[in-house]
Length: 285
Image 1: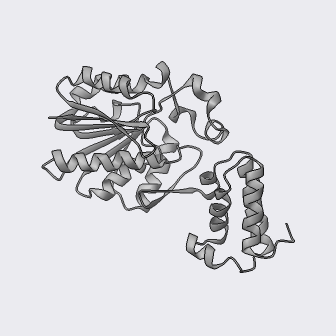
Image 2: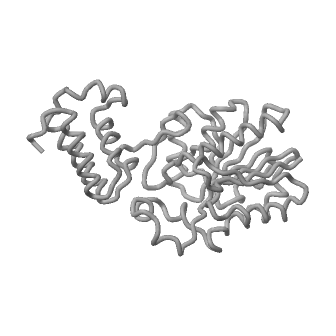
Image 3: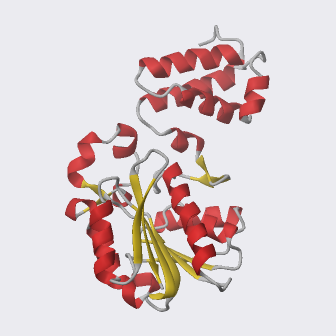
């Protein structure tokens, strides 16, 4: 490694090394930006700068860890979501771009169906808090509550809320238990939805390093949707909105559960940018 003198050399060597080890070569750029404390454009402008031996050693240590499957986000400690930086760690799921689409659609539904500004929003299974915090940042007048069964996850979410100046009511507990004390205008959830049988097919970065309680669910991954659908009728105001993120093969099953709970509601499945079924919404008039 000591022969690498310039930033561009370090990036080129690391990108090749990751590719040779079956990892995305783009991770090298993210880890180098993190090491040097630079934005993308800052890194591009610094390609001909010299890299110190200490920087190179630290950068390469992270490259080695990533080849072993440790997610880049666990090495940098952050991930961008809806234009904001969120802290992430082994206690929470790494935020995915598909969840941004859940928020985008929910905001449009709120605009169309909710006349009042001070709406009550609940986010069940908040993890790092990306859904709850983003909703609060986008709708400052909303009252937002976020729940999780994991205390370490809630601690991470609380830290994110504090850093992003989002006032959220965080509650520890399982599924709807922590929100049974009132009625809600909007309930959102990105629950665990992977069937245990699917575990061997997951990438090692997900399977070995992300929290299993946030990934897997019983009944072919559908257990929590079933539980929530049964409990939501007594928790939602009219008009009310439900938004679920789902596994790409679960759309029809989750729609059916919501139709059983809300026979007169508008219920539909929405595809993500990759044309996969990814969200199910219910609008209760």
